[in-house]
Length: 250
Image (cartoon, rainbow, N blue to C red; front, side, top):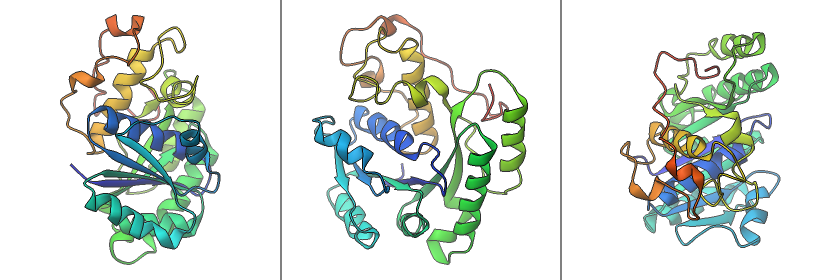
């Protein structure tokens, strides 16, 4: 398993939501994780100040991009997984890409987001060393639609213009936009009454995080249900997406 991942794109496309989603799955899998908030808007830092998070999920604010390397290295020394919300600023994206084992470029279901993702990809192509290594980079669909559409096909075409690989498993609309901050906490602190379809969203988040190489592909018992009793605990886990399925449309 990899020890660190950064998420970012030159246009806001849900990097904060995706970072929190990934970190919450890692923590729920009983792997301690540090979530570094390096985005311009300190949403994760403010989330943590409200008392959210656990002993296995710590949030730290990165005030200066030049401090990022030391903070990632400190977390590694403490044997914690590192998830970095690199936000949308080019300098922070470049620095995070040079430090972390993997860089995920989120893509929302909009041509503007896809164009920004390609711009981010080209930005990283221009870097030397680890930061420019295409093998460590991947596009991640953040807000998959269950209904094929012209917009989805347009996004597919834009992303396909790059040779950078695309994760075959995407994060669905419900998991991406309703679950993480609804009522506070994480995806695993909600009840089905608060977010219908919660079991599916939890399963989807786990599949995505495992596909990124941050947790084992075997789903642990700790991810079988939320902390609080919920009707979703009785629902079957959603099967993994087939690799032949487009990542932006299901």
